[in-house]
Image 1 (cartoon, rainbow, N blue to C red):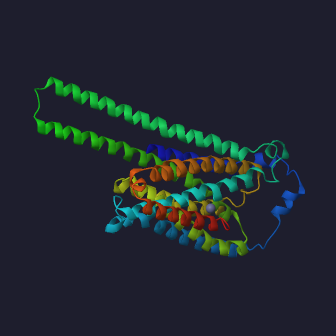
Image 2: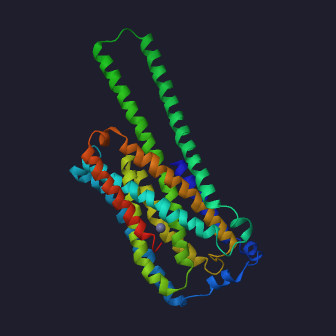
Length: 353
Ligand SMILES: [Zn+2]
């Protein structure tokens, strides 16, 4: 939980920094007229846009909550219990959504930012920064994954040794006790699996939150009702889908109610928060200021690397190579259909945001 909050705070601070430094961005002149042309286009109506943005805040909040809570409520449906087969299909769909978020939404956004004509040609268009940062971020995610795992396993071993030692000092135990000990080991193995699910859920939320804030921000800062109107519907679907992807992973982490509520809350408020922030800062903030482009571009690249790694390694490969799907070819095929549906739906959404 501490990790979760720290990541959120860091992301918000970085984003805030990117608008609160207009003087810095003003000091860099726009390098060419292509950038100017991008700034002056479309219809402008601040009053109408504000009304639409308020509608957007309410409707996106509701859509996000429905999306992320839907998988959580699936606990009430007996067929969709995590131990049952149909759950593997729901999970595969969720993993597909996360994979497409990384590849189809976040990574292209990073390219758009870091290769924008509003940034100086040198060095920004001389080197593929987006993929470079995404690559490093994937390695960093692997490190986080493996270090947290080995720390947990080390603690398990120490606990086990301490328990063994204690047992030696005591008198000989009955056979029935031995049975209990074996059960304890199985339980601990399940515990390490659960620990893994929890790390995955937290990192995923951090990766998704970056994208959610940024799309909210660009809507909040815009005063163009012609683009906002269709964007409201698109963003509602966007958050609904993404929420289902995240909700599936939160479900498996088996958090207690309070932690679940915190994660649902953070995901649901991020886009509305981004819109509100965009409205509040629309005088100072320009999407095409070099500082904003660089900060948002780098954040997007970092989260793209994280999401791609997590979706492929921790979600898809983990499940498809796991005993449940390996034992059942038919279930495997249905799970692939679900992955393709998730990937396809989320890719379609990339047309708008
Ligand atoms: Zn998107």
